Length: 372
Image (cartoon, rainbow, N blue to C red; front, side, top):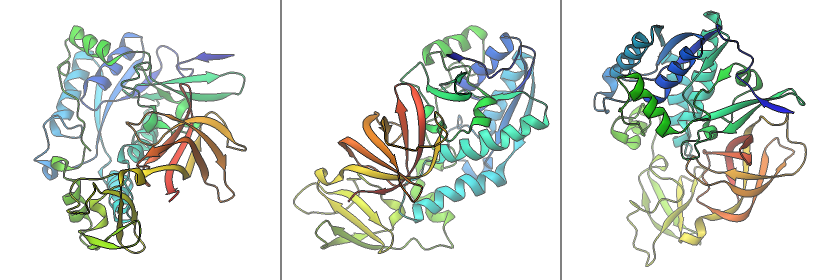
């Protein structure tokens, strides 16, 4: 029998709530207060305000975000702290982000942040504060399966806001000590609740950009941060091996890209693959960017301890993609092979592939190689 739980915490237990200064984390915090938990609000400082002066005011790690979080905490009558994790964030998130682009891959920094910051360092801080668990404003659900003794991760009830994709790396220990108060709710109902509570963030717009990249210009950001490492120009090659142009550096391109190539080949050209070994961008026709097989590394499984045999799943190759039917199977090198029933568009190394069965998150990994 499986039953939804709040990870065995009891009313009155101390909970550390991550407060980004946005409406979701603020309402999640308010809901826990209403339910009788002893809530401590924590805002994580990950980036220097002075370094991102051109970023929109509502960016999650801005000074205004801290002020908004503190205002909400004051209204709820709870303690609020700011935890400085800039050094760790620089190493584990920004460093990873830049290095992956230099390797010709397209990373997802939110997944790295969840792994190392929100559910890594913040969970350690919660232990120091004597908290039973941490809570975030993610739209996802946790369940405890009494038969297997495993904590399970499910999609949020609001499919349009589901964030389970960026949470596939959570371990059993992390899931056991994590609460997602918004999992059963819709975004619309959460914003309405914020308005009823009179929270200053009730009408605050959502931030869609990468929080540490000013003005969405990741190309300039990578070039500046990689000053000691070469972003080298090279050749653009078609699928037949012909040199058809020159590129400005691998970090400026991604699989599936059409705009900005500066090519006149007589047909619309798309980036098919990046070849870091030869510093080349490979282009082709639109049909060339569809692939049926990938290999994923650094897999984490939630629903099972490990993958021992083939399993039919629905696999999601990027945050905004629809899950597609696939067969996953273990490889002797520790990777997982994912074979899709129908070829998928622009499978991109560096992104994550997450395995589902219905709403259940089976696990996921980082796309390492794509059948070419």
